[in-house]
Image 1: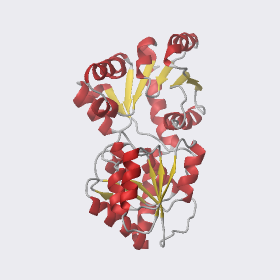
Image 2: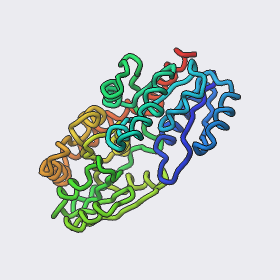
Image 3: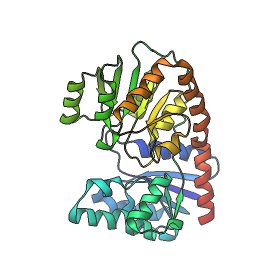
Length: 324
């Protein structure tokens, strides 16, 4: 069986989807032939379609973001993975929103042979907001990279390093600043800061460093060097940072809303993302209570086993075989 995993055009700082499926590809190659194909810009779309069709694959898997490509591939052989529909729900208005809904979501989902969603939350949002039948969508969650393995680390209770991956509005960073006010720590922010966030940091006087456009290896090192991972988002399609933290053996604080509470399970301190006092109390408990901290790490390591590359690639392989 020949599988083609189709990736969006590479962009600086945007690598998460590709790294995810590169890990899956490594496991799939133990069983089937796998080609990883990176598309060009949208202006080169017809050239990409011509090249892809020439491969005469058994399965064409559009791995995310470039959903519209599904409509130009052999529908009976095409799998589409949807990571979230947040851009449609919160990022667009008017005619652009309608176009995006049709070209990126409804039409590709409608014609693909199989559609997967990376969480029940994403599936439920597709069903609710796009009027797609739930039986059309199979939930296959994300996996962590094989790079993410537990390594012993001495927790710095005097001044812990707190890692926050992502700074978009739904990442809830301003409330995190409020929660950290007066706590001796160093916050590591990964993502391009805007003026509002910078002003909020100044108001709360949080000690921080900022990194943008990190490579996958650079991001991995941030997990190695941190003491706590914070991921108190108000909403997510999945939330890779949670399983990366757990796989690395770092205590995690995240939101007790879907999909975070299901993904993290009992391997995290769960808080109301809109309650600053809960976020603060959770962080302080992780810092001061070593037994609780160790329990979070242990339960996180147990939980993350279900997100290993072999486990997730096996689910995709079963789907491919069913189609082929």
